[in-house]
Image (cartoon, rainbow, N blue to C red):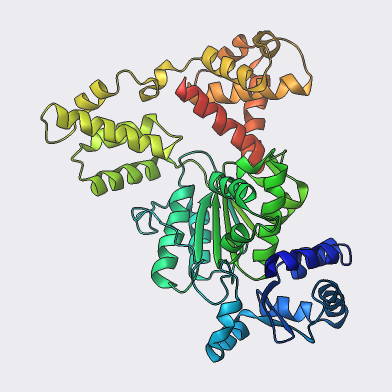
Length: 455
């Protein structure tokens, strides 16, 4: 039985001797690195962790548990990483006793994340919709673990969350190369955890924890996919705690705010909310124009200003797809041998895409999309029912019809069973107000508008 297997027996004993919090924070992270010459040596992952483990009460419990498994040692010593490195320099023979998977005396487990070089702070277009979240991510990149921790950013698909995470990674690699920076998607985190369970010879998950807990900055994208996965949530909870307690930077991105993830454990929602939560919104017209011009410059596209303005005006929800539309237009232009894309080229290239013209959006399309979203019937929406399950979708329909196709309030009233224009105005204004103060309503509106555009 090797050193780690024996240490797992010690952990089994201690799990019943100390509180769950003490075990998770101060006991489980301890790693045995030497057992020879009647000395049992362990390393803690920080000075704080070492001090906590050496607290007389906890130290006595650790010592008693070790004695039950290791019968002939005379000295128990708990040190931190810096002391461990010093010992290694003084006693080269010590490394012979370190298990192969240990990362304390080498950089073998330093994670090298590959960041997209196209995603930087310099080429991220800042506007009213994203200036606060950009400033927050930039601050974290400049001062990891000092100003904002954790940082939770959220917003719809294609609005720039991944760009900002990669921009932070590129900045840190350039300006703080000594830091261990890890960027993963939630899918990668999940797959790594599942693989570790499948491949581990014991239940310690040592390799997985070495990867995710021995970092200085952890960035996780699309964290919403952790919902409805209790085992993954449990492991991420402990990973989060370990990093946070050791003053490591955590940045999380999601398509929705923590309180909107109903399947997420309350303790995780609480952790996410302990730092700064900031949303990124759909860009306004001016920002969309700037984004498209930047994209054209980066890719070397020659395109008329009218085309830029046209695309910016008629597609306003997803930056990524908007850039794709520009690429489609320019590709079509080059295909027919033209040096610069014109409005004529744009209309021809995009003639089969619904969202190039708001004229394809009708009140019926909006109502049907809302009904599908809330799983209610059209008859109930336009009828007289006044229960909350119907009233809120009805008000959303009114707001979206007024905003997206801009027909008179009286005409909207006729659509909804002959309601007068003051009732319609109240419904429109109520949703308009809620969007400004209620992130949940704002997310719903963005989701429905995105579905309408796709349809």
